[in-house]
Image 1 (cartoon, helix red, strand yellow):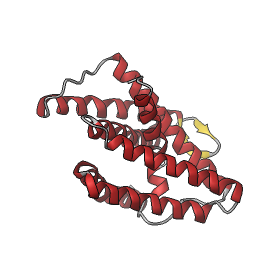
Image 2 (cartoon, rainbow, N blue to C red):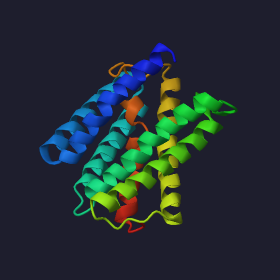
Image 3 (cartoon, one colour):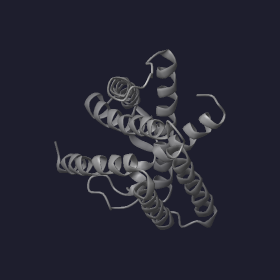
Image 4 (cartoon, rainbow, N blue to C red):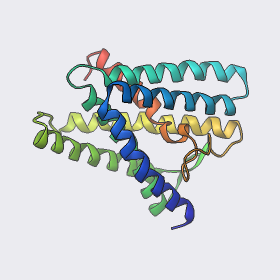
Length: 216
């Protein structure tokens, strides 16, 4: 493995536990964490989107996305369960796409993101399904939940994973348009905050809308 992979792995080992800590703690901790991510994301978007016609729609979308994330987390009864559900899908979609894409390579998916491959998409789906399978086992065994893993679950995971991957591609499009490699340099091996939450800022509001519409 090259140095960038080690940096990516080391950063993930620190960031993922910290993220789960703030999300699980909730209350002020989660609000502080969410606000910090929003401010950093906004700063990165401002730095990269030098055209006004893109800047303001981006700000509105980020605001909508983070408000949706907050509303999802504070839902009574299953807010935390739902939030972690989407978080796991996004994390493991990214991980599966990265790992399987690098291992199998193969045909490129789209020009705006030359590192994305069809094998990576498949890896994203497999990893996200497996993550939710084990997540539901833990919920049922240790937290007395009655969550079932079935065909409906698989379809939902595939849809949310697809939205997350589309979010990744959309941010990749803007990075290519604005001629930058990463949205920032805050996270070693990963780039900026937007590089890490690109899928999540699309998946969270999408999932919250599904709940509001009583689809799930």
